[in-house]
Length: 474
Image 1 (tube, rainbow, N blue to C red):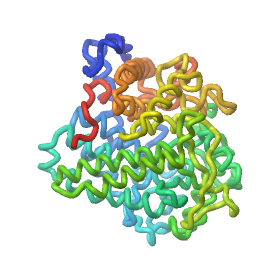
Image 2: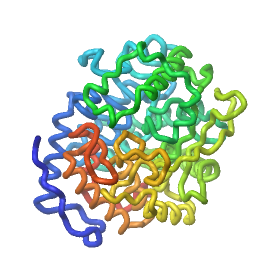
Image 3: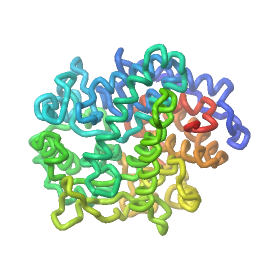
Image 4: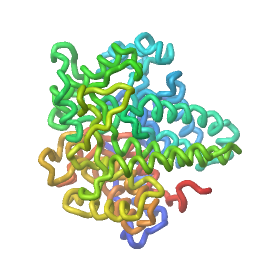
C-alpha cells in the first residue's frame, strides 16, 4: 500500500479561504489522484475495486466534484456515463451495472433487478442494466461545479446544455412521483435510497418488513468486508424483500404500495441545493431560473415545516408508513417524526436561506456531546449518546467523509468559516491517515470498510483547493 504522509498543514485559523499547500498536501493530492486513476474503468469510476465493482449514483457525483480539479473533461464523462442510464420517467438509478463484471461479484446483481424487463413500463433503458431504486440527488450540484471548473470546455462539449434537461427531469421525478407524503418533499422507498442503509433511523420502519428467507440470496459484500462492519443478515433480508416487491410492481411509484417510505432530511436538502444549482445553470444557458428558485424555496420551507425539531437541534426523518394502513402509495401520508438523531439531520446546513435560528441550533448540535467525536474531527453518522450507537457498523455510528464534506460546505454557505476550516483540516488528516478509508470509528479514528475509496479520495482533492466564495452566484 502506498504510504500517504499525514496532512499536518497550518492550523485552521491560519488557512481560512486558502488552498492547502506544502509537501504533505502535495503528497496527499498525488495519492488521491492515484486512487481515482486506479478505480477508473474507462467510462466511470467504481467506488472500490472489490466491495463495489459497478457504478454508483451519488458516488459518481462526489467523484466528479473531485475530478474537476484534475480533468474537467473526465469529470464531465463521469456524470455523462451515469446520465446515459437514466430512465424515461426521469429517475437516475442507484447502480449502473458493468456487463464485464461477473454476475456474482455483487448482490443484488442485474439478474435480481431485471431492470430492462421489469422496469420497461417505467422507462428503464434496454441497456445498460441498472437497479430500480435511486440515491440522494447530488448530481445537479456536481454538474454545476464541474461546469464552473472549466466553462470553456463545458461550452465546447455542450456539457451543461445536455445535462440541464436530464437533471430537470430527475428532479421532476422526485418532486412528483416521490412526493408520497403530499407535503412537498421526496420520499425514499428503500433504505439504500437515502444512502444510509442501516441507520438506526430506519429500524422502526424496517421492523414492519418481513425479511426474505436467508436461503433465497447470497451476500457478496461479506467476501470483502468484515461482518462487524456491515449490515446484519436480518437487515439484508429486509432490503431484499423491499427491492423484490418494488420490482414486482414494475418500479411504478403510482402502483406500488410502499411498506417503507420516509422523508429523509439529507436527501431533500440535496434536492433543494440541486434546485439552486439548476437555477444557476439556467441563467448561464440564457433560460428562466424562476421555476428552480421557487422550487428551492418551497423545498426549504417544507424541510423546516415537516422535519425540523427545535428541541433536538436538528432535522428528523419522517416515517410515512405509520398511518392506518402501515404503507403508503401516491395518496399521501402525514407520517410521524423518527426519534433517532443522525448526521442526516445536520446535512441540511448546506441549504442556503435557512432561518438563522436553525443555523445557530445546528452549529450547537455539531459541537455538542452527540456529534463532537473524540477520535476524529469528522461527524459520526449517529448520535454518540444514542441507544443504538455502534462505532464500527456501517451507518450506525462511524464517521463518513462524504457527510463531512457536505457539512463543511454547509458551514461555508452560512459564513461559519472557522468551523468549516476546523472540519476541513481534520478531514484531510483523516483521509491521509486512513489511506482514504470508506469510514472511520469516531471514538478511535480506526479506519473501516474499503480502503482507497473513491469518494474519499475525490473529496480530499476538493478540500485541498480553495473553496468558492459564493456557492451559487446570481
